[in-house]
Length: 529
Image 1 (cartoon, rainbow, N blue to C red):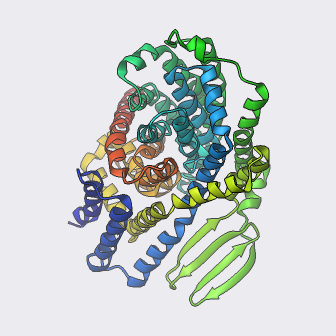
Image 2: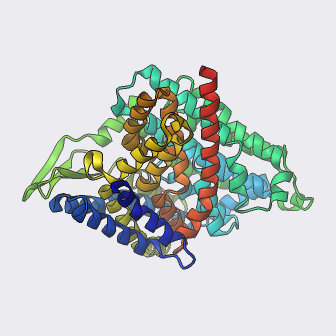
Image 3: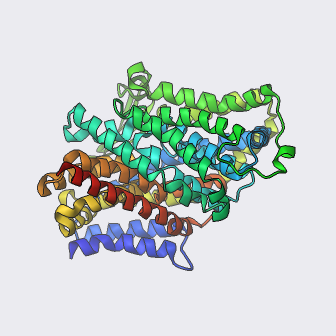
């Protein structure tokens, strides 16, 4: 009965957001959070102060995703109003007028590289507006970007979901490397299917079939170096795979290898001034360089931006507010419950690199004060309702995780395991996806469910590294239906009240990904026997 009650809010949320007259997320998510709070208070007998503290922590936590979205929108608006976006679109058309080529270069290879450098939803935030600028419709682009931003996610932000997401499991480095190898192979196999489904959101099957050769070469140009580097590193597979893939994608498109190019394309493709193209790519180059420099642990800057050495402290009743020397904002012991909140001002990719790159763009593109104010105003107008949605989502996540071993989310996970037993490999990836669906992060999914996956593997006799690889891949595929990511990309594109519509369509490729994961587990287990 506890498990049924635990799952009720999720069922109601999905129903409310995907029915014919769907509720918008800024209504559905806060309502679901309220329902979970009532269940915790009256059925699970949770402490009132603890429930309220988790709600407050969830509300405060919205600062992380909303600041990233704000930074991404502001950069996009600056590029738009400065005319740089138009130049970029013209350059892409000069490489190829073929829609498949444009979609794979930006939505696949470029986003793949951005994910390897940053994570945090940055790839969809940057790639989706570029594609809309090329003339593709906003809602299909949102779905396309979400689905494409799955394969590289397991190694996003310089491998954070692996080396940090699984850090609490006391695994040896050789076990982590084995997980990385299996995850990369599984994701690469899924990549042979996923882009074709994603392209269907924007193009007819006939056009996709005519360009199958380019699509496969585009996929392999990223995934082969991705798998290769995963043999000895779990930090750089996505970053290097994306960089190599982007260069090869542009070359393949220029040579029209595997492409069906219309005859009239000869008239449309014309050379552009190199200086104009270089100038437009300066913001993106800065973005990637700054992200890499600030996220590679060995270079030391990451530690500086995350230092917790105190600068100021204030006592707020039982709670304590602290600002560190790296401007990390912390609120500890909220309402005397031990619940805490933290915001890493310099590490979250909002001030650095988004705002920093925007400040560079203003003189670079010789923007007037009026244009800058227009970009700021346009950015602000897009943020209010998404902020309400995210507050509801993050409060709901905190409440679903409240209760230790009897937390609603953990009860759901245990119910899955109990139903499948030693057949758990078929569904392990689904649990990883569930974690991303709620939390908006593959890293948080691994942190939350990695221990459960490890316990299930030991209990039913499955290989630990295989089950954790399925968890890692599942956390990546969950990006397609993640509420936070859907709200973020919709906000950036100016799409309103379509979250449920998007989920209903992106869940199809996610299930296809899950099928590949299940088949991978079967083959892997057979090879061990």
